[in-house]
Image (cartoon, rainbow, N blue to C red; front, side, top):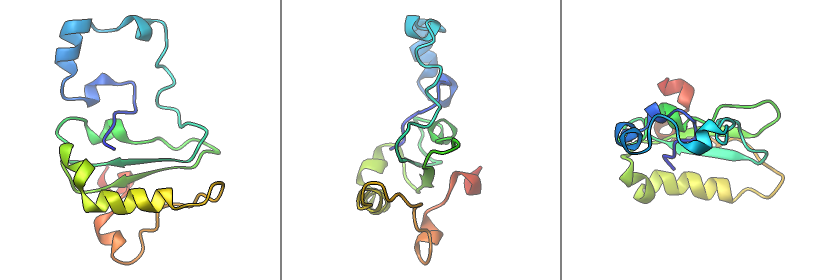
Length: 124
């Protein structure tokens, strides 16, 4: 929920403060520890994000599709703190968790859901 999943710190509001304390690159970054952070994990992955986050830029929360991986992005209207209590987020999380193991399918945006749940492409 509203997590920066790219290795680009510019997508985070507190990046200047982080860099003032830690420098431009941390030791783990220099060692290449986070270089594959943007790659989709080998399990079904859904990023729930908001364009009006205020803390993490929505661009930093977009899960880039990878060949052979089951990934998607669900955009909801919310603030960063509001993601944890937003009823639309609860609907999306419940839908994702209700899927039987091994039977992943994209989030159903038909009917009323299409009016409130957007994709990263639609807001991009």
